[in-house]
Image (cartoon, rainbow, N blue to C red):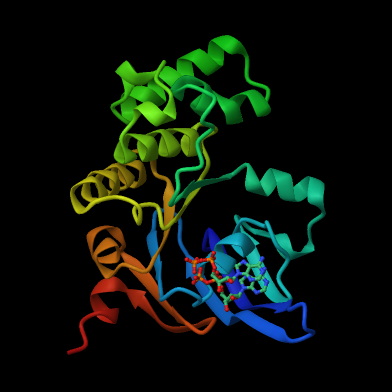
Length: 235
Ligand code: ADP
Ligand code: ADP
């Protein structure tokens, strides 16, 4: 059974002038445990909407979304919070708390989840070592480079040991060298920690560097999907 399965998922928005925008249009795709699954498309293709649907931040208009065997389109808010706790997210602009140091940023989701101070200290130390920032625990985000900020973002997203990591344009604000470093780290997250990764991007390079499977989105639809090698092998 796939870890995430979308079946005929459509998401429409009503605009202030009474019109309708179909942001995601009859999308079906399966993400298996262990995949690094790329979703590529131009701006406006529906990628961010798809991420918000998978993360249960917005309800689908129709279709079903099954995460780890549970149809999340049928859940209440309380149960949705449970689903969301199994999904980590990283963002283009990193979304770190500027008033908290690195350690406090990474500890934040653990505090919310009610972990003890001793367990938090141990987990944060482990995560800092994994992302190579053990010497930056006391630093504030503004004192870090873009690549370092994203490594903190990755550590925070992984803190509660989610099965899935959603990366929404996670390298779009980074230069090519730093992009490469962050993608290498994501590959280690996938290979060493067994986390399933969904990579949203408008950059073909990112897909070819890290993804094993890909869905190509255009105007809300998936126009092609499959193994990266097969999808991009056409002349
Ligand atoms: P990107 O395309 O880089 O992901 P955004 O997600 O910010 O950028 O916006 C994509 C498009 O979606 C834009 O045309 C924007 O106007 C529209 N959009 C995003 N959020 C909303 C919203 N809450 N209401 C109306 N339009 C929105
Ligand atoms: P992408 O992430 O690929 O840039 P989006 O999912 O942001 O695409 O947007 C897909 C389409 O849905 C766009 O036409 C955008 O304007 C529209 N859209 C996104 N969010 C909203 C919203 N909250 N209200 C109205 N339209 C939206």
